[in-house]
Length: 374
Image (cartoon, rainbow, N blue to C red; front, side, top):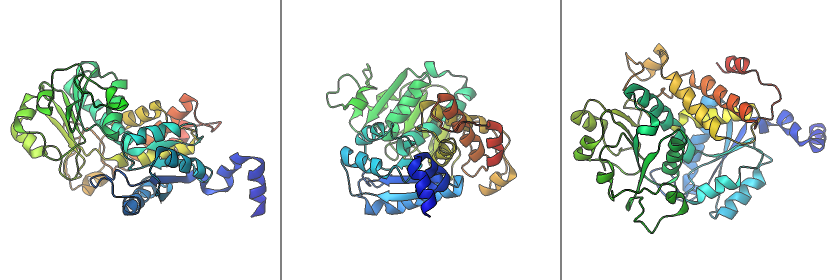
C-alpha cells in the first residue's frame, strides 16, 4: 500500500486514480433545518442523511458518506468542509438553515471539488424544469409572467434566483410576515434581492393575476379565492410536504386550466430532488469538475424538461400503476423511476462543466459517456 501513497504524495491528482475519492461524496449537515422537522440537531438528522446516501448509490452509483456535525456557526462548518476535502470528490451540504447556508456554500466554491447545497439548488432545478414545460404548454414567456414564491428560505431564494436568471422579471417573495416589499424594514440581504415595489402586503393580495405559484411554506394556505384570482393557465407547484399548500383535487374542483405539481408521488408532476442531486454529482465527478456552475444547473433542468417530452416506457408506467402517461398538463416533469434520467441529466451536467471550463478531465466524449450510463 505504500506505493500508491508515494505516488499521490508526488502528485495529489493521483488520488482520483488510486483511491475512492473520484466517486465519493460527503453529505454534511448540522441538522438545523431538516425538512418538515426544523432544527432537530445533528444526531437526530442522521436517518435523513443516511437515506440521502442510499439515494446517491441507488440512483447514480455514487458512494456517499453522511457526516452529521455538532458545529453550527458559518466559520465552523466552512472549516470542517475544508478539512475533509482531501477525502472526498464532492460535498453535498444538507439541511443547513438559512441564511447561513448561503454564506457557507459561497465560501466553499474555490475548494477545488464540487460543493452544492441541495436544499437550495435541487428544488430550484427540478421546479425550473417543470416550469419550462408548463410555459411551453401555456404559450407564455418567462419575461411576461408573474411568479409568487411562498417561503423565503434556502429553496425559495435559490428558485427565485434561477427563475430570474431565465428571464422572469416579476417575482414576489412572501415570507411568514407577508410580502417582501419596500415597506418592510426587517429584511436580510438575501430577501432584499427580491424586494418588490408592490402595494400587496399579504399572500392573498400577491396571488391576484399570478401566473405561477411556488409553495415552499406551509400546508393548505391557499384558499378558493386565491386560486380563482390567478391568471389564465396558472402553474401551481405546492411543495410543502406531506400536506401541500393546496390539494390538487381542490384546484381541479375550481378550475380546469391549471398545471399542478406537489412533492408527493401519489399526484401528477412530482417535484422531487432525487431527479437532480444524484446525477448532478455523477456528471460533475466524472469530468472532475471543480465546482457546480449556474450553467450546469440550467443544463440539468433543460435535460429533465426535454426528457418529459419523450415517450414513457411501460416499466415506468407499471412502477406508478399508470396506463397512460404523456407530455401534457399532468406530465411536465419525468418520474424519478424513469431509468433514462441518469444518462440524460449526468451527461448534460458533464458537458456543461466542460463548456464552462471547470472540468479537469482533458478529453470528454459526450456521446460515449452518455452510452456508458444507459
